[in-house]
Length: 509
Image (cartoon, rainbow, N blue to C red; front, side, top):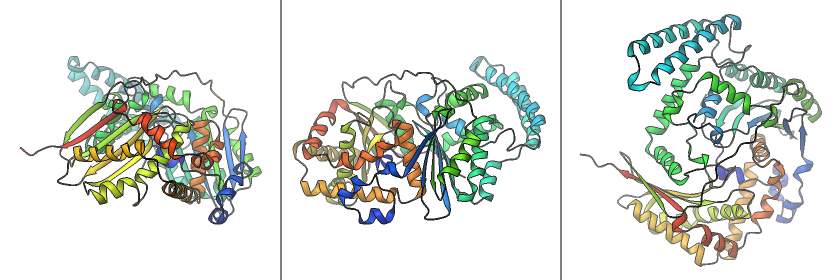
């Protein structure tokens, strides 16, 4: 089963509405959209330990979608400890003191020795060129032997097996800059199984196979980041665009940090952030709300809350000039441009959502008609609002691939031409209405499934503190005017506020 290291795409998380039922949605007029009250459908319960639970009954099929979101992501990794949130996501699939083991008492004895051996090996390796190679070899051999011994007691992938044998689909987890998510869809009569597994995972996780999995994450970084030029460019772009904000960190972490993450640090990280009062659960599907809450309280209610310490986050200083960076690689050219902007719930963020749709949503969008079809200088070009995430001020980003023999420089100039139009020419009423209709239609599609609704409910509850941010979305984007678009474009789409990253094709010698 694949584990995604990316959180929900920023803009798709914004595509929400007050609508719930497909039959109602398909026939609803714009006025009816605002009248339909999501709060009448969602039951929001806060347990004594601070855990927030959102429930929606939808009896369209005998299934239920369940989302658990923790307000922790790459932005919460400590300095020198990047990749911790992502690595912990991996480790929490290794099981608990009752899941994933044949005899935990015996396994625990070996795990203690593994931790001691791994710590000693890391301590020697940290010396760099001063390390005693003979000691490194001895410690590595000792660790390998202990890991082999531990395998005798391990039942691999037992969480996956328990879910799969009980009809689970869409079982996965993801770590983003802002949040960590665990999700699954099950037959409605398997909610108690889910609650038992997830409550156990919240209280009794065992970081078994720690050093083996750390090697797996290192290899994941090599294969999916360092060996993929476009992703490597994105990593470089974010590290350039943000000089102070934690959004400069890659979700997977820097290699030199990953290779020295320790069980002690991950356990402390888990205790700090995976607390009930830092957690939102969304349950959507063929449920009885009262009976489901009995199950939730039974398994999650007794988990003690942890004191959440206030965290100061360094603000990104205002940019005073264009930033540019380049990556030379054996790959076709690629271009990324980003402008700093505020995040939700700023009204300007809604305006940027509309601008994104104007520029790149569909084959009638401005970028497609002007740059892809008209000038024919790009294979593709797209805009994204809210990169890389939404807890803190973020970026409006444009990215594209030049069409040979055209260059990234030509594509960049073409992008600026369309951006400048937003500053100088009011968007025509007909074009703006079309965009609003497109957004509304996408809202309907996004929430037509139990999983889609559970995803958005839990996302906005954990990010904004209140899922009802969703209910204002359609109303807010309908307030966006051509003057708003011109004002926002003129204020933020400036040379001194932008960062440009270019992938340059490495010429063969």
